[in-house]
Image 1 (spheres, rainbow, N blue to C red):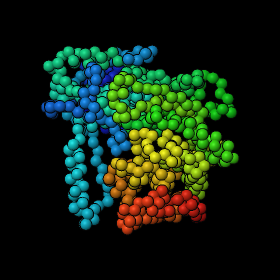
Image 2: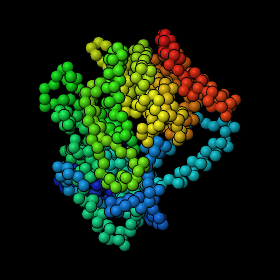
Image 3: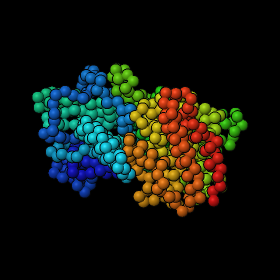
Image 4: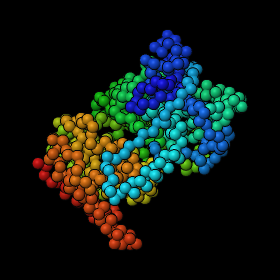
Length: 588
């Protein structure tokens, strides 16, 4: 494959060797056979991520022997090192009976090339003041040390997996390999963990190489990681697919017998570890559709891999809707999503013995397919008065969930602020309850960080975040409002959006950027259509800034007395009444 960049994502990645089905490189096809790829890869007809089963990366004269950071291989009967298992947490990243017969795999041709590690560095546009030079120098020194500890080869391989899990179809896991000189390591990635085999010298240990290749050659689609059923693997499609058409035209058969024809992809989470949410439009086919049951017309299908241990999203939504009816608060129903159907499938090909050995390092997940009514993005509200109405409605729904239903959402973001269009009426809807928990929840129901990065508050970006409280969600609402009014014009995101760094940066750099946002006078101005909401935005920013000031003042004056400070609201600064007061300010 190298030096050709794989198509189907925004990532400029070019694995040295890729595993594909023979149909992808047949002699009478566009790529003219395997032999035609030896020198320059598939020049003119690049592979798509949707065609790739696997990858191999080659590093020549770079292998450093002496030990391993690896944990299991497909040939070993146990795990050689429990302490070195790569089990990503919130601070990181992040034999089948299938009826489908895997097509013959094409032989791989190896190019002796060195590709650069798939790393990306971003820095804040804020420059340190003169008094912060030594601190900034120290930060850079620590960053260099951290970068030196990173295994760039394995990071590069993980970047290929990121694209395969995000843009390669409905997949649970990916298997690849890293070849360093005459040493080979197998790499296994799924939605919860990364496992790396012990390296072995295939020049010395011929039999191990033959056994490995024979095992891989016998894999079927499920063993390569494809969720089959319910969908045919992406590589079996008659032509390669780009990211927004990956499922277009495929037929999905649900366990209740209904069949859906999938259409365009609305959203696909770019992630390796985690839920890997994918949202696709669909229509019901093959049976009469009752207009009253919600299946008529376009519906939304959500594929995800949530933690098996937490309460299911459909259950949370249904309990909230029942509470609204029982309490007489029927108005809430207009602002909650409506789930038409959901099903869960337990999905792991790891052996039970290995999972037991991994213990709490491995988070069991299920494949959840949820069908909902079609909702629309809040950015369809093009004027300040329109946006103000929907924003108030979503806030009011959120407050009701906390105070009357004991539900904490924990994932306030632009994508979860939606609209329901019912006749001539439009309602703001709070969507996606994947991360919701009871308000008094004090632990974690998943090993992954809560929230979506651009809208995540400073506290939760920390490596050891506090328990998620409703104040965190209110602060996220502030970021959502700023994101919309400063970056959207007539429903479209403007070129070079000023807050893009909130999505691009991570860790300390993101914290520094958001601190600057709260304190600096020079912040992005709203689009002309949203200027009437500038008063809202300014008051919200002041509210958050006051909360942090209250916390800092308490820590300075009473550092050993934490019991007297109200951390729930940061000294009564961030509360429902205060937020509601701001939303009642006139939009003029």
